Image (cartoon, rainbow over all chains, first blue to last red; front, side, top):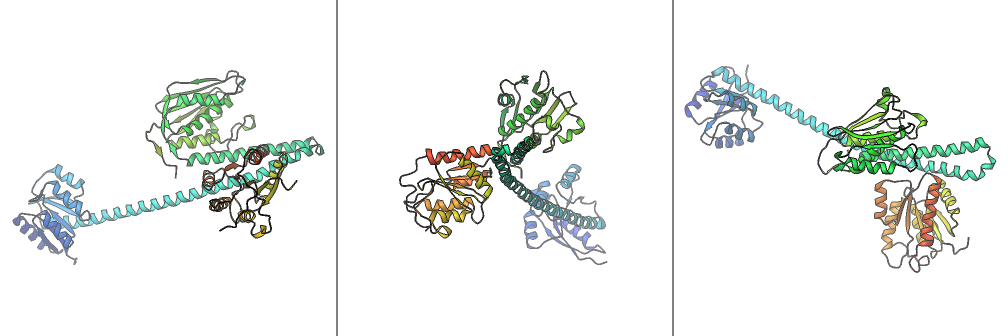
Amino acid sequence: MTRSPIQVLLVEDNPIDCRLIRGLLDEHPSQTFSVRCADRLQTAGEQLRSSPADVVLLDLTLPDATGLETFDLVHRQHGHLPIVILTGVEDEILAATAIERGAQDYLLKGQVDRNSLARALRYAIERKRGAEAIHRLNEELEQRVLERTRELTASNRELEAFCRSVAHDLRAPLRAIDGFSRALEPHGQQLDEQGRSYLRRVREATRRMSLMIDAMLKMSSVARCPMRRQRIDLSALAHKVIAELESPGQAPPVEWIVVDGLHTCGDVQLLWMVLENLLDNACKFSRHERYPRVELGSSGPGEFFVRDNGVGFDMAFADKLFTPFERLHGEKFEGIGIGLATTERIVSRHGGRIWAESMPGQGAVFHFTLPDKSGDSTSPRG
Amino acid sequence: MTTSAPVILLAEDDPNDEDLIRLALGESGLHYCLDVVRDGVEVIDYLFATGVHGGRNRSRLPRLLLLDLKMPRMNGLQVLQMLRRVRVGDGIHLPPVVALTSSSEDHDINEAYRWGAHSYICKPVAFEQFSRCVQQVARYWLELNQPPQGHGRAEVMALA
């Protein structure tokens, strides 16, 4: 079996060792080796630049470098070349470190014969070739992933822009329906009570659809808007939200319990919406209780909860809570079913998660985590 | 309606919105005259008495332009850009422009102001709010606001 000659660069300053190794390789029966010698690192570098080699056989003790540094210098310059270390120093730790850093083999002078040396060089070349191929494939794969991600991001953005534009366009016919229904009202005498009731229902339906469109646009913008993270006193923020939620003369009055000193890091406008949605929900679903109570607290670092003593829900539907336009309680409670979906988006943009626990009639607890990451801002989700 | 009634120019391609604006203004008790154009090209033709509005009396300039942004042929933002180029010319008085549109996108709002809109209003869906909005805008620009001297009578030069 004939093979093309393997180009070996032997970096070795001892002329006797040089001759010995050359002798071993020259005698090999089935493989031709073409051996060049360099007696120092600098010469080796020059030789490699002028004509390539298939493999480098490297002594670690040279006039211009010693130890693993010798290997590192060659490896850094010629990372694609398989390097086999051939040294007189028997040191297992050194050997292991050399392999770890990318050497193909660590051979001891005096312990190699014709066959084992030839085999070591051939295997080194093959192994390196395999490793390079894997490396190349990985790089290609990464490149492909990057391209796909870019494509997906672009098409997501396009889709989102399209949805927003449609949402805006839907307002025009809706405005016409509402406006002309209103214009009919003065002609109400010509309608019977049922007719007038239909007219009212048309307007009520437009109002709801308009709310849904607004909420959809809002939900889409919480995913896109730039986020400015800062330290936030969540307790203080909650008190402000509550002040806005409270309507005077509300009966029965809600007992608000806000644990003091809750801090986190996040976007204050987005977290305002989180608290607003959760506290408003808690309030809404405990409104029919005799003593409605809503509580904001913490169950651990970066973990918060909003608890109420309201109607609660069946855990069988827990996964539907955060889906847009899913409502568990029908018409008994006002709402269009998008507050929790929006909340979930905001919490996950902060790197946290949200989940709920409840039993019918036993109140509900909404837990959410907000990892306390510092940093000034993050870019909008792509 | 007498000829001296201030003119509101409405650029609106949707006849429904046109009628709703008429309803709203009709309830306002304001003294006005409403002229309607259907797209951006027509806005320019109207203001400079060219094209289909070639025969228009150029000295009768609108006191207010209500500008929809999404229109065929030339959209509202393009109209604003074009008027912006003209505004810098001497002695040319153009009406204040109120963008009146369905869009509440930040991009549209910012662009409209960047190109010189005097005001930006997102048309509410509920008629009562819509009506109040249109009436307030009209009342502000027609009654409250004092236009520059000679406005509404100045001879407008053709687009350079």
